[in-house]
Amino acid sequence: MKVEQISVFLENKSGRLADVTNILAAAGINIRALALADTTDFGILRLIVNDNEKAKSVLKENGFTVGKTEVIAVEVSDRPGGLAAILNVMRDTAINVEYMYAFIQKSGENAIIIFRFDELEKAIEVLRSAGIRILSGEEIYSI
Image 1 (cartoon, helix red, strand yellow):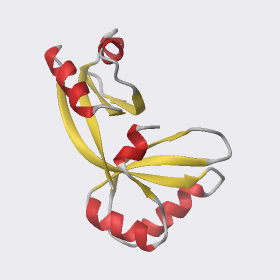
Image 2 (cartoon, helix red, strand yellow):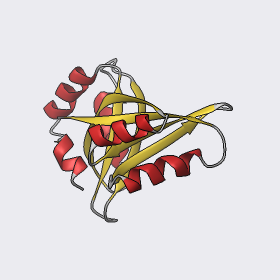
Image 3 (tube, one colour):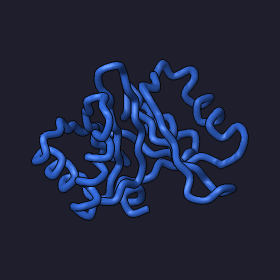
Image 4 (cartoon, one colour):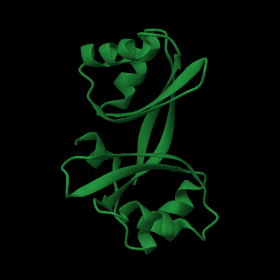
């Protein structure tokens, strides 16, 4: 139930994000979700795409540093308190949320939150035990 995410290290200068998206578009790769974090000198673009291997390959061919990370995708009610309910399940587990980002397909339905936990396997067990739906990579890549 893990999802593979790619991380692209970007110089913090104008046009670098456009370069990445143009390279992916030219290769026919569809971005399913993304998050961008930056510092003064560089940024980290985290992407979930429909074809990870092809995305990594074309980005590396174009001089980008690319890594991969396993994350999990959790279905959350799109209502006030939806995220709080998930975080409350995790509160007393000593599992740390390293980062997260979310997206929604249609307002009023379920949102999807991408989580990176410091103890991924343990987090999966805790969430499943609480009856929280974890989506497979195939489900996310095909959205």
